[in-house]
Image (tube, rainbow, N blue to C red; front, side, top):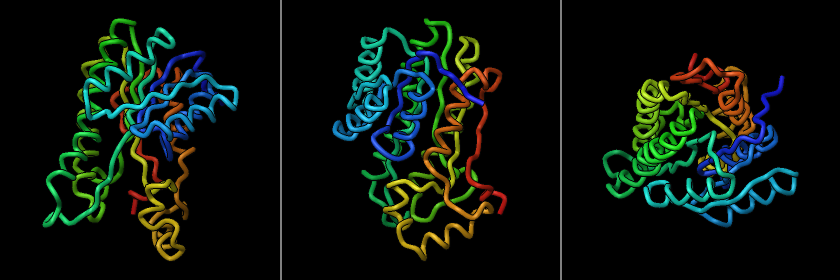
Length: 253
């Protein structure tokens, strides 16, 4: 089964690597025109160029989504390029580590600003555009951390991702009247640069993680991207306000 996006325009935040990059490639392969956002302009351009090399239509736009003015720049640059906006994927996130007892206030605030306030800014601003256009789709990437299972030394990350889930449900309720669907994906342990820094490259650590997953392996960024594609497409036209866990069955344990 395919989920064509038929020249729709998508913004994917934090798309310079990992899950965000996979989402950008997947939406492009389905026919979308993709604005690849990352705070690092070089990473964003590498992904956008790779999409263009594959025959897709993509631009790179550097912006820090924790800053409302930069969010406006991201959205308006996308609209100037293609004159519309149909899909928003809120993926950008940071994951500072540390014990609650010694955690730095700046790191806490930066995590909340990017992971939660950035979702609010982008949902609010894109929601206004989509409302005027008669509809759209927002997909949030949260995490099983803080919602289904805690994650050691990641209190700020857990809090921010739990906040995304709560915000998204109310966003879905309010935006439904304007034809805007809002859903959230909760990835489990996914093999990305972020998890590699946490130890996925260590065979012993990886084996420990795999034991936690009933399917016996880590997820791939592409598997998360396929879920996002479904939620962004007309195949999920009656689905809003939902939270979908994609974790190989880990939360059953």
